[in-house]
Image 1 (cartoon, rainbow, N blue to C red):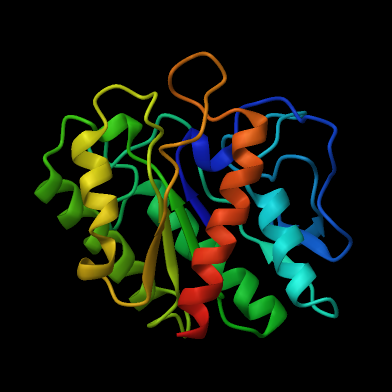
Image 2 (cartoon, rainbow, N blue to C red):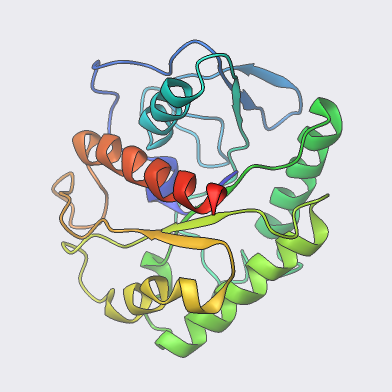
Length: 221
């Protein structure tokens, strides 16, 4: 599952470097699965853009060449805990849980991970408040998604180019002490599209590799 806001979706135009490898699928918003497009079918989907999932899939299938990977895209731009999008019982939270359970029931296999990138819309929160919100969401998902009590979680830092993200990044970097089976992808060295908010295509590719590294380590621990 990929959840969060716009940087979890990916907002830069597909760079033509390479699409998802063979064996990559997505669980569509309307239900059912299909071969992944350059950008997954998130609620915030935009045809022609790309996300971190391309290189995550590349790294996963390189390590597991006989496997397949099915993403459950759940992210939407501009969403937050503050605006009641991702807390337990909120609309996007409920949709993510519902879609995950539908995919699990269809394929008959458990959820393998939650990839979270969010926080640009929650910079008014203190570190402690964001930590509490993140814990509540993840604990809720682990409880409500079938057989997901210990599903690995990887969160990602906001870019250093984004002003005002210090409290959120501090909370994200503290995730291992907040939640079991969790890790953080360090993204502050990456670059933006020029808007001081969104990672560019090259950075999204690096992010996908870093998310996979952290997910792989956490899943095997």
